[in-house]
Length: 144
Image (tube, rainbow, N blue to C red; front, side):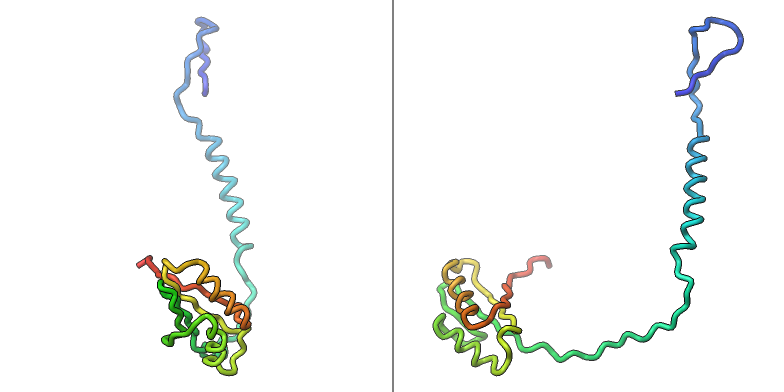
C-alpha cells in the first residue's frame, strides 16, 4: 500500500493513505512478456522448405471374420450361431477357422451378465488350452 507524505508541516506521525493504483510494475511486466514473445515466435516456425512425399498407404487385407463365443445365462455355449459345449469348443473353433493361426486370432466373448464366473473361466481355460490367447470381452455401449 502506498503512503502520501505531506510536505507542509503538521504532525509527523500523521500519514495519509494514497488510494491511487500504481501501474508502473504492471506495464514493466507486460513489456518484458511482449519482448519475450516477439523473440520466441520466429524460432517456433519452420523456415526450411521441403517437398514432402505423398502418404498413400497400401491397402491392407480385410480383417478375418470375427469369432464370437456366446454364453447364455443358463450356461448354454454358442460358437457363432451354432450351439456347442465346453468339451467341444476347442475343436469347433479350430474347425471353423480353418488354416488361420490361433495365436494371431482374437476371440470375442459375449456373456450374459448373470453368467456364473466359473462357467466363464471354463470357457477361458478351454480357449487357452487350444492356443487362443487373444480374447476380447464384448459389452453393451450405453453412451448413446
